[in-house]
Structures are given as C-alpha cells and as structure tokens.
Length: 518
Image (cartoon, rainbow, N blue to C red; front, side):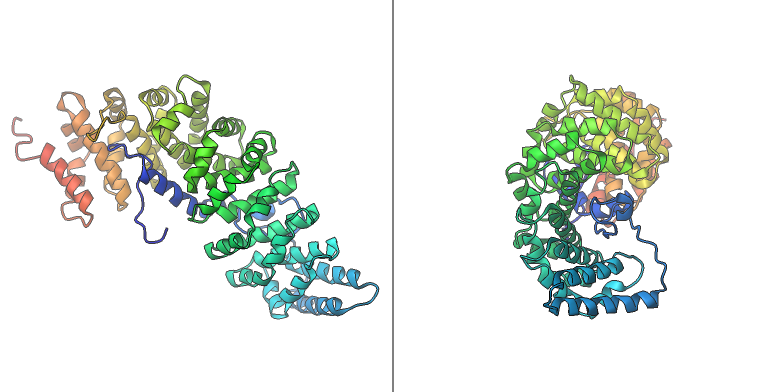
C-alpha cells in the first residue's frame, strides 16, 4: 500500500463514516501485522530445529545449543556439502543411505542459529544438490531431510531465501497426496518461510500453484500438519493484494475446516488458524462476507472468553475487529444487543483492557470502537459495562497509541448513527458522563500531538463538547482545559483539513464576542 495516505479509523466519531476508510485501515493493519506478531513472540520465518509440530518457543528465536567453536562448525558445513555431493553421484548399493546420512549431517548444522552456516552451505553449492534429492521417486527420508535443509536456508536473509527459487516447484509438488504427511508438512514449512520473506516471493508461490495444495492440508484433523499448513497459508495470503485471500475462501471445505479447527482444536492449532482468519477478514471483502454468514463470530468470542494465552488472544482480537469493521447493518445483525454473545464479547474485551500487555489493550479498544460505532443499543451496552471506567483511565494515562484507540471508542459512544449527510446527533448523556469524569483533557492532549489522525480525533471531540454540553458550558470547559491554546497552534498548520477544522471551531465558539457578557 505504498504511496497511500494513512487511512482514517473504522468509523469517524463525528462524521460516522464507515465505507472505504474502514476497509483501507483494515488492510493497512493486516499488512503491518508482521511486526505485531513478533511482539507476540511469533516469527514470520521459523527455524526447524526438532522436526515436526512447530514449537512456539523455537519459533520465537530459540535454537540448539552449540558446543563446538564456530571455525570448526564452518569447516564441518563445507565438508557436509562435499559429502552430499559425493553421495548424490554415488550409484552403488547403499546410495540412498549415503545421501540420507549426508543430508542429516547438513541439516544438523543448518538447524543451529547464530552462525553463518547457511551462507557457507550456499557458497559450497548446496542448493542444486538439495534439488536433486527432492526428485520424485526418491526415498521419503531423503526428501524429508532435503526439505528440512531448505526450510532452514529459507529462514535466513532475503538473498538466502531467494536461493530456493529452483526448488520451489518441487517443494510445491510434494504437498500433494502422493507424498507422505511428514514430507508434505516439511515442504509446507519451507514454503511458509519463503512466503514470509516478501510480496514478490508470495506472488511467485501463488503463480506456481502453492495455494490450493496448502489449503487442502487444512482439511484433515491431523493437528501438526494443519498447524504448519495454516501458518504457511497466513504467510502466503498476507500481502496487500486480496486475490489470494479471496481465492482461498472459495476452495471447497476450507471455511468448514477453519470453523472446525477453531471450535475444537488445541490452543496452538487454533492460534495458527486464527491468523488465517485475520488475513482473510482484513484483505478480502468476499472472504469477510462468506465468514460472516457462518457462526465464526460466536466461535471467536467463545475462544476469547476462555483464553488467557497472549499468543492466542491477539489473533482472536484482530479477527473480531476485522469482521466487525464492515457495514453497521451486518454488525447489528451479528451482535444483536439482546443476545448474550454481545455481552460476552464486551466482558471479554473489558478483561483485555485490564491486561498488563499494551498490545492487548490497544487491540481490545480497537474492537470496541467498531462495536461502539453500531446502534444506540450497542453503545448503551458498552456504557453500562465496566469498559467505560477502564477506557477513561486509559485515556488519562496510557501510552499514546493506546490512548488514540480509546479516543475512538469514547467518541463513537457519543454520537448516534447519522441520518442523511448532516452531522450525527449527539448522545448527551454519554457525552456529559465522559466529560464529567475528566476525559476532555485527554482529547485536548491528542490535539497537541504531531500525529494528524490523533489531532483530528481530538478536534472532533472538542466540537462535540462545544456543541453538545448542556447550558452552553462547553466553551468554558474547553477554555479551562487549555483547548483555546491547542486550537491556536493550527493557525498556520501545514495540514489544510486540520487548519480549517480548528479555525472553524475558533470562529464559531471563540469569536470576538466570546466573554463579552462577563
């Protein structure tokens, strides 16, 4: 999405816009989510140190302990490639076992993090040899070891990952039903590392047909295989182009498999499947529409309510936020205020707001902002919950990024859905409650920020206070909180919209006659 200006939030607390801005921000967040995955102890690319059944601690950067000195290991890596070269050319009785033994030694070295074994292996000519070992008709163990070596090469730098290009068609071909589960899973892991590197490599894998066989690996109930396939798929579809996500959701059985795994699987598997839902719902309107016709929101809410695991909660929150960021009609139908599911999600989001993890607070506020932009009944449910007191506390003292998300929730709670093109009606009870509890200073603090989006939120809320507080007390409240000084900083601001918004507020509420009666 290079070249685009930062889109606004799902729903502007004053203008209550829902359409393109919502979709744009949903996609922007999806494209940038790789950084947040790292914060949640995930890695886009994963070193395979112990075989199958990906371990999240290893995924977060753990590696095998290294006893030997680096120069010795470097020498061993070069020697291992030479041994593989001899084994590949050997035609005698024990040819297969020689290749397996040589591959196993190379894999042992490439499974260690912290030293440049991959570069040494590449310079020694490992890739063509590994490609030969992937040829169809080869022994399963041979193919498995070769794919394992390639997996860990692809866990390296961009150039190291690109070295796998000649092997990609073979890795994809081994995803099919003719290969054993262990071979298919290891090849999927290698492809997941390649897909995690760049949009260019994702597009190449899709053009070579990786999507459908990876998707079919999601269909059975084999936990380890499904977990690896889901992780690889999330890497494959996460680019800014929605086509892959749209194509994935159309493959027979995929949606049913996603629902089944989310409902019945263990935490690790459900977490990987949740990341698939994150990208489907973020990037593809078609996928979002298909998913919203199922009971996926209830399944996600149930998972969220039952989970205390940070790694699983993050994609659950992001999926819910994406799914609930569409048009208000869909949200109102799915989250009927009269049903327990709506109260359940608000309770779960309140629990997340109390978390010590900043990212969880930010995500929970983001989901709440989408619910708060719904009907008046939705807004009332939030206002009657403990979420409001938590939000007010966060607005007063949380880090900037959390404070900005919280401001969207409170702003959305103060306006009713607009009819026509005019300004939306103000929900005075909510506005008065928040202002009486000291939220105005938090919004004015946002006005002073260099972030244009934050400043816009603050200006919008100031306008609500000036227009909506009873007995015309909004002007005095804004002045007492330092709002006039905050507005005046926009007099020569480079952002035309912000300058005009601030100027209009000053002219309308603090003109020449302001204070004359006093």
